[in-house]
Amino acid sequence: MSTDNPKKSSRRKTLLLLFTGIVIGVIMVFGAKAGIDYTSTDKFCDEACHVHPHAKQKWIKSTHYTTKSGVATHCIQCHLPAEGLEFYTEKARLGFQDVYGKLFKDVSKIDWLSKRSLDHAKTFTYDSACIKCHSILFSAKLTKKGVDGHLHYQRAGDKLRCISCHLNVGHWTDQKAADMVEGSEALDVFDPAAFPPNPGGFKNYTEVLPGSDVKFEMVAIPGGEFMMGSPASEPLRRPDEGPQHKVKLSQFWMGKTEVRWKEWDVFYARRGTPGKEKEDANYSADAATGPTPPYGSPDQGWGKGSQPAITMMHHSAEVYCEWLSSLSGKKYRLPTEAEWEYACRAGTTTPYFFPGDPASFSAQSWWRQLMGAQLEPVSQFAKFRGDSGGRAHPPSVVKPNPWGLLNMTGNVAEFCLDYYDPQAYEQYPADGVAENPRGPESGKEHVIRGGSYRSDAADLRSAARDHTQTDAWLMTDPQSPKSIWWYSDCNHVGFRVVREFEEGKPDAAAAPKKQ
Image (cartoon, rainbow, N blue to C red; front, side, top):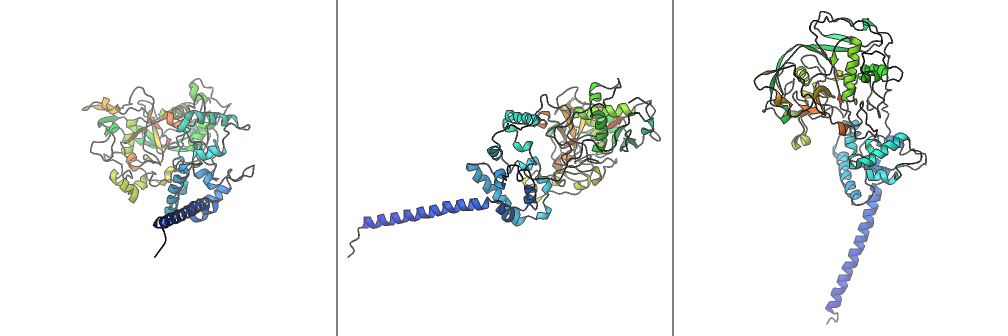
């Protein structure tokens, strides 16, 4: 007969289970800690998890590895929050994302350049990590520019991130921005031969900028009538695209491409370099002064030449047109919104000037995001989110619209002359014809058209409207007052020029002017 006390036996079992649980818990805690430590090493990030082929090499070349103090910054010190619960939740999220990429994605088809953009970097770089190391924002050796920038960061609160200004410090890049001025500068003496008469009147012609080999093509756009805006039945339309109304336009010329850096740099060399201001009394103060140096790299490291000129403000584009007009004796300006849409449509009445349904091309729905949207024929005519790689491209990589204009959709969006008003179309007569409309008489923001390299296909439709966002696009500019020439946070908008057809004026070279 057993002499064991049932209560004692039960107590021993409870203590044994408790001890076993504690041992297992300790093993799990230390195991988890060991696992976290191991998966947080640079070696693990590089070899076992990440699929980026050049991450390690470019990190080693960066200022965060090769430091003056000899203290290297490691992967998790930038790519995970500094501490707390967020450290573990973000580690789990990013870890799952990287493992999925390692196992299921074709590395050769990933566009790594687009991953370097600010929008992407925000999802895997954290201010708390930056501040943990850079706790003293106003160090003894900080430059005046740095002081201004950090003061602006403090005042902006949650609206700014460290990487808004320091995007490329963690991984070295060999994409060096070109010098602000390339090629020939403008001559000091006006050469009337640089602006020859157009052969045969209203035809396409080539303009040559004085004192350089820079040329650009102007396309003759015939006058006519069209229905501006989109019908209520058009897929993915927005309320500000209606009501549709009939517009009549006079003939005009429009640049075949957006203004490229090669043209802008001639202007900048003449207008933006100290000591070269024009002394002609016909110039306005702004046109004579010219753009100040940009805050940062205006070409985003994508190169200049035939690339579309970007990051300048609407004011800068208008001054460029004034400069071109004064030199040539021809009336250049930005296109009105009506002129832009008319030229983009090129006689078509469908959502795009090429065939296709916006719903098939758009990646806005969850299904299209998962399975992928249809790229053709959009990719033949536009660089957009689906195929741009997150950057602008030279105009020659796409086909023209029916009137011979390149990049009217995608690549970079384009300034229009009009102020933006979401109800602007309501002011036009429902049954009449608006002749050469110029939009609202006043406003704060201006219309931009055409979508860009980062736009969904829905925003490439001929009737799609957008507008400047001055405050948001100057967010990281620490200057007070802020620049009137350059956007600090907008790299997807450029412009193209139009030239008015002036009745009764012979299409010939302007009389010589002193420069």
